[in-house]
Length: 78
Image 1 (cartoon, rainbow, N blue to C red):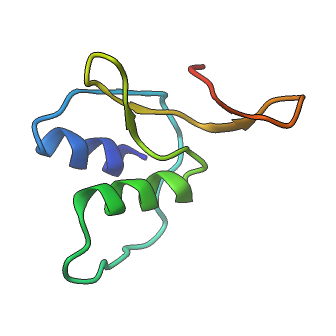
Image 2 (cartoon, rainbow, N blue to C red; image 1 turned 30 degrees about the horizontal axis):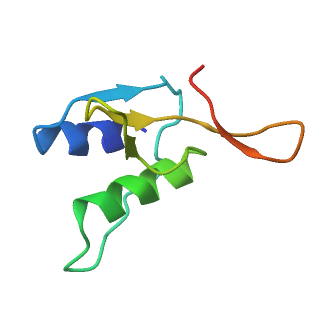
């Protein structure tokens, strides 16, 4: 999870990420031409997070995936 936030910040963007204790257990190699967004979202998905998305102020949000009781997906700030 930290790796995803670091990639976004290296692009000069601000982030607001819910902390996670998840650590990648092994290296992952991406194909040539893979975008930063694809890499970030892959890391987030692996850690159980939703895709990164900007809020109304342009700050990139990174949130754990949660499913609401009524079956709808929820992007919850915890």
